Length: 270
Image (cartoon, rainbow, N blue to C red; front, top):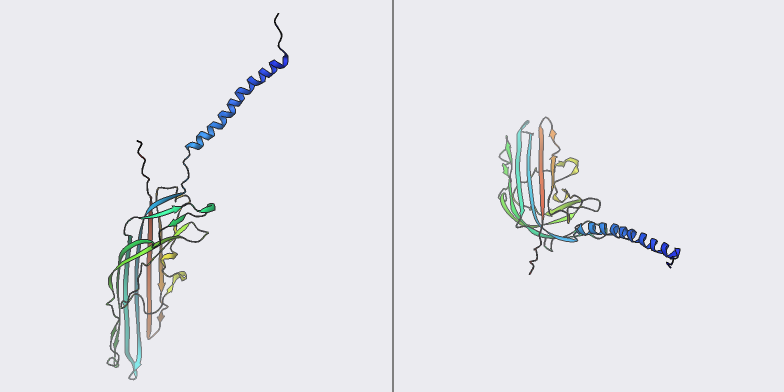
């Protein structure tokens, strides 16, 4: 005689059969995101960028003054001063320099390791300038004409280092520090009196910032950043019946840095 299976046995079998497809679906749902996650490239924690830097400075200035003095009972003594000059500077990295970039902690900006001495840069500075005063009139003999020394003008080789750094916590920009305009003696390099710079901004390389897009470091293999600024200044002039004086000075500074991520060698399978 055929025995009837208890009802609870059938229910138990049906529930097990229903659970198997459900478990498979759940397992499949977990496996798909895991596979996608495996395909995503891991974020780099550090990389070495071969870095090149280029800096240029282009400046010019001019000055003029003339005045008539009272001498021998009349306005007959005349003094005139004229001056002008230019400056051109170009600096480049000696060779692509390795800069180690590491991810900053807690979402902070990446850390740029440029070694203890910075990035070597070489270049040349060419400065030309003149400033001369001429006297005429009855008192000319007592006031010989003068010419400012210019033996320090001309070409000057520059061998120095440069440093890149983040410009404050609230910006995503880099600043560059280097000695692009070394001091010169015996070379007129501007009007004999201080000029008033527009917006109270005088030429200063570290003030010129270059924006860096979010994720460029450690996320982009090659990119270039640029910074430039033009400055203009005038000498507080005088325009009177017996005296005239005016002068100006202009400067444009530009710099750029190119970063190329250093590749890793592929391991050969044996």
